[in-house]
Image 1 (cartoon, helix red, strand yellow):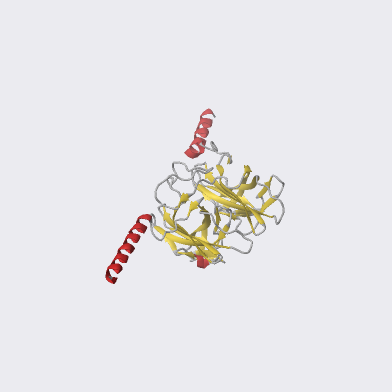
Image 2: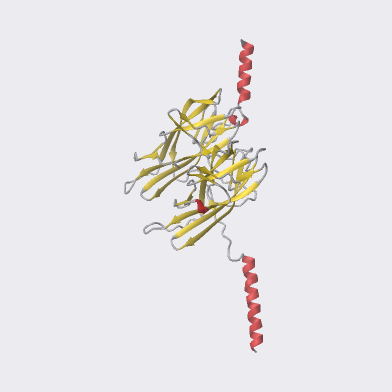
Length: 382
């Protein structure tokens, strides 16, 4: 079964407060234009896209939260608070079951505590807002707002809603945070520069196509495109590594996989058969097969799909930004399974690495071999 789930004193107090802050807190929002810095965390916009699909305009934002304290910090998204507005006054709203990913919702007395950051930890949350534009004129500059709230832990494993914060980013344009295409490879390199640049402590160590949060490190090991008639596919292979000291169970959240290409076309992971190598969470069930021991790594594959209907644009971009959600599961003694945490995994501006029929050197060798075979036939026919 699957379930969710005096002077001296003043000096001492000041010292304790300073110790409670992690080293990363000193940086705050310095050097970041689109950032909120509050006593316990920072929230930095790391990627933003504005696209059109099926008569709708979509705003897709990835926000990186960082815990500045020396204690675990739980944050939740206040349901119904997410909005976007362009310079023409058109309003975008959060709607749909997969519109908010990675962070749990707060609605009334219901508190979802899955988004808990350890001291100094950073993790992403993804927000999607839409507006039924149809043929109306849309703007190109945007402002986003959403409310997040701290969730305080109480004795007896109880929780209460704490301080609320308005997260607001203005002056946004499509592609903000995107960089030049990065090859989907695991070899060390310089990561694309984004709004939320990696700090030296980043477990990805500057590698492109890499994501790290909590106990997992995910690296893109393959990205290939293919086509069948009017169907276009992008195959993504991701290697997950457990960088913690305890076993980790991961599962793909069904329906969470989306991909935006460089032209703003949107692909989706259609169903369970497009996911391989990892268990799936969805429909009230969870498959806990994807277990990683400390230091262990395994690979999973996702296939993203786009169908070109009549009047739709033909895909032509070679840059892709895929994302999906994996859930960290726990198997209880009663054999029930619950979600401990969601991770909104995303990679920005990767280029496909379709293997060519032959590399340049191989092509020359093949041509030379064909020439020799031709010469042999000529000699035989003389």
